[in-house]
Amino acid sequence: MSPECRLGRLHGPQERAIVQFLDTLSRILPPERLLRDNVSMMAYECDGFPMHRQPPLAVALPRTTAEVQQLVRLCCDHGVTFLGRGAGTGLSGGATPDERPTLVIEMAAMKRILAVEPDDRIAVVEPGVVNLELSRTVQPFGLCYAPDPSSQSACTLGGNASENSGGPHCFKYGMTTDHLIGAKMVLASGELVELNEGEGPDLLGLATGSEGTFGIFTELTVRLLPVPELVRTWLAAFATMGQACRAVSSIVASNIVPAALEVLDHLTIQAVEASVYAAGYPADAAAVLLVELDGTRASVDSDSPLVEQYIAEQQPLSIEGTTDAQQRKRLWQGRKGAFGAMGRLAPDLYVLDGVVPRSRLEPVLQRVVEIGREYDVTLSNVFHAGDGNLHPNISYDGRDPVVCARVKAAGMEILKLCVDEGGSITGEHGVGREKLDHVPLMFTDVDIEVFHDVKRCFDPNELCNPGKAFPSGGACGEGRSARNEGALGAR
Ligand SMILES: Cc1cc2nc3c(=O)[nH]c(=O)nc-3n(C[C@H](O)[C@H](O)[C@H](O)COP(=O)(O)OP(=O)(O)OC[C@H]3O[C@@H](n4cnc5c(N)ncnc54)[C@H](O)[C@@H]3O)c2cc1C
Image (tube, rainbow, N blue to C red; front, side, top):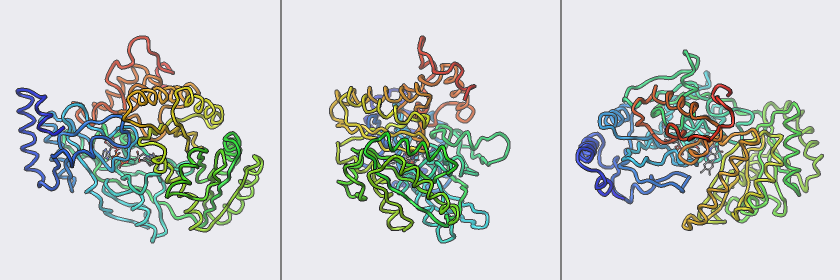
C-alpha cells in the first residue's frame, strides 16, 4: 500500500497532519535517502518474522546523530510513530511498522567504526556496523567482539543492542549486554542522552534489550576481547537426541566452561547437507553436537581429554576434533548456515525461541517433536544447548492460512511448554510483535503495566516502536494468570 493509499484511510486533521509531516520530512533528507514508493518500501514491511506485515509510511536513511534527532523531533511534533531498523534480521517482528502511519528510521547508513582503542580494548561504533565487520576490523590488533549471532554476517550492532542478542559463544562470554559499556540514544523527544556503564542506576542495562522501544541508538561503545591463543572444536554425531543432550549435561556439570555447545537435529542436518552450507555432518545421525574450547593453550589442552571422555560416555557414532582454522570454519559452516538451509524445506520458516533448564532439554525436546506431529507441521531443532536456549523451527507455506493457523498454535504450545518447565518465552530473539500473546504466560497485568510505566519514562507519548515487547495494558484479561504472581518482583 502506498503512503498515499494509507493516507486515504485517514481523514480531516489527521490526514492534514501527515501530509504536513511528509512535506517537512522531505526537507530534512535528500530524495535518495527518503523512500516513499511501494517497491522500495516493500522490504520494510516485515523482518525475519513474515507472519505479520505492515507497510511503513516512509523510510528515512539518516547519516548522523543530528539527522536522527531532527527526524525524531518531527515525529514527536506530529504525533507520528517511528522505529529504528538495522538489517531487519530480527525474528520476532520487532522492526515491523505499527498499524498507525510509521516512519522507519533505517540505521544501515550509519556504519562507521569511529575508534578502536587496542590498549583499552574498546571500540566506538555507529549502530549500522555489521556484527562480523567489527571482529574483522579489530582482528589485526589481536582482538575480537565476542557476541556472535548466527546472523552475524548481516545483523547490525544497533539491532544486537536493542535485542540483547546472543550467539553460540555467549555461553562462555555472555550476551550483548555484557559487552556494551556505553551508548548514545535519541529519546522520543529528540533529546540525545548518553548511557554509560557504572554511572548511577544501570540505565544502559535497562535500554539494552528494550527491543527498540525506548529510543534510537546512534553510537555504541563496546568491549573487545583478546583472540584466544588456541581454539579446539569437536563435532560428535549421535544415534539419538537424548545422547547429545546427556553429553551436554555432563560437560556443563563439570568444571569446564566451553566457548560453545550447539546441537542440530536430524532434519536440520539433512537440510544443511543438501545445501551450499554442507559441512560434512553425518547424514544418518539423529543429532550432532558442536563443542568448542578456547583460551590459553594450557587450559584448552588440559580440558580437552575431559570433553572427549564425556562425549565418549554417550557412545557417539563418530567424533571429529580439530584446531585447524579451515576445518573449524567448515564445522561451524553447517551451524551458522542452518536457518538459511531450511529454505530447502518450505518457502517460510518460523524460528521459535524459548528457554528451558538444561536438565530438562531431553524430555522437552521429546515433547516438542510430539507437538509437531500433533499439529502436522514440519519441525526441526537447532539450538544453543549450553544455554538451554531452544530454536524449534517450523517450515511452512505462508500462503496457506490453514497451515499458518496450525503453525501459530504449535508455536504457542511449545512456548507454553517452555514456561511450564520453568523456562521462558524468549532467550534472545525478544518478544517483538510475535509473542505479545505469550507474555501473559509469564507476567501479570500488573507486571505489564510496570513495563509500560518504565517505557513512558523514556517515551511518554509511546511513539517509539509501540506495540512491541509487551502487550497494551490489560492484555492479560480477567481470569488469565501469569506463572508467578508479581513476576517482576521475583525475577
Ligand atoms: C539466520 C538468522 C540467525 C540468527 N541467529 C541469532 C542468534 O544466534 N542469536 C540472536 O540473538 N539472534 C539471532 N537472530 C536474530 C537477529 O539476527 C538478531 O535479533 C539481531 O540482533 C537483529 O539485528 P538487526 O540489525 O537485523 O535488527 P533489526 O531486525 O533491524 O531490528 C531488531 C530490533 O532492534 C531495533 N533496532 C534496530 N536498530 C536500532 C537502533 N539503532 N536503535 C534502536 N532500535 C534499533 C528494531 O526496532 C527492532 O525492534 C538470527 C536471525 C537470523 C535471520
